[in-house]
Length: 81
Image 1 (cartoon, rainbow, N blue to C red):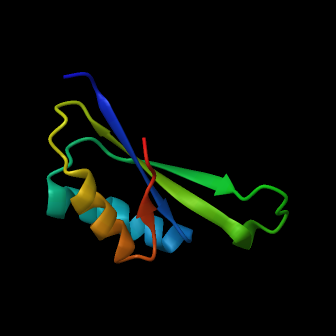
Image 2: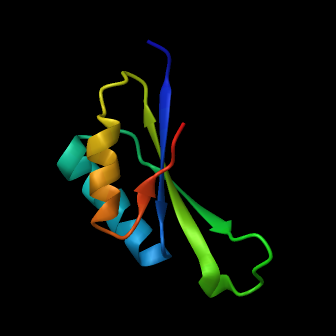
Image 3: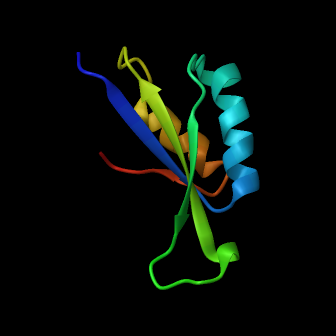
């Protein structure tokens, strides 16, 4: 199976950092997820940025539905591939 990349969209940096820490405990993610600030189109205010947590899944073993439900706990979602 080819490498899979999951992108979780979170409402703010705090939520993204919590999700990053919890991914290892809850899903056994070995590689450190990447945090990316995603400014909304047309928004200048840094407070209106979403944060992306990029999770590499080289073995394709993470369940997208479980990741989506997990992100929803933080008012986020799993971006569709």
